[in-house]
Length: 178
Image 1 (cartoon, rainbow, N blue to C red):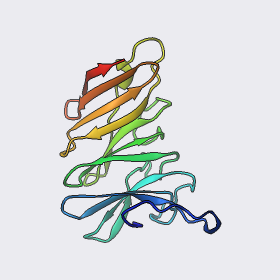
Image 2 (image 1 turned 120 degrees about the horizontal axis):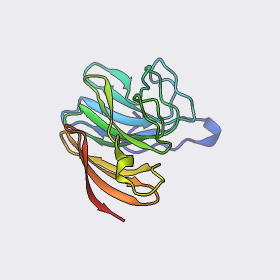
Image 3 (image 1 turned 90 degrees about the vertical axis):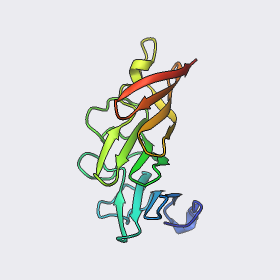
Image 4 (image 1 turned 45 degrees about the horizontal axis):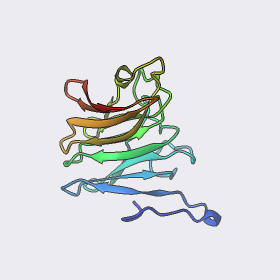
């Protein structure tokens, strides 16, 4: 982790970008975004932004944005929220190989269970909220409850929809649409 604020690369030094750190309430888990290629054994492409977690108790770093085969995700990932205890991290990614079955060509919201090492597709079913023939969407904004059990998403397409989803029962409730 590079510190409390993002470190901008100096073009002549070719320094990878790391930043946006978030720490769990007990100080064990530190989550951060990075373009670095030397944080885990699977090297991420230098043009991709992945999310990592540092376990300060065991002094280990793990990849949060791992694909179904365990490799770093190609594309961009943006950290959104971390549960209070650090067990769950919510993030937006353009990669479609984080969980099976993702066909959306825009960005999606995912929730990683750090203790179980599993990733859930948080925006699954979002296309059903959209009207018309264009059901392609992107998650424009998201937030997660402190315990990681609920999420709120802004699903953007030709129509924008604010929706709330209980992760436990995997169903959406529309808050507002335009």
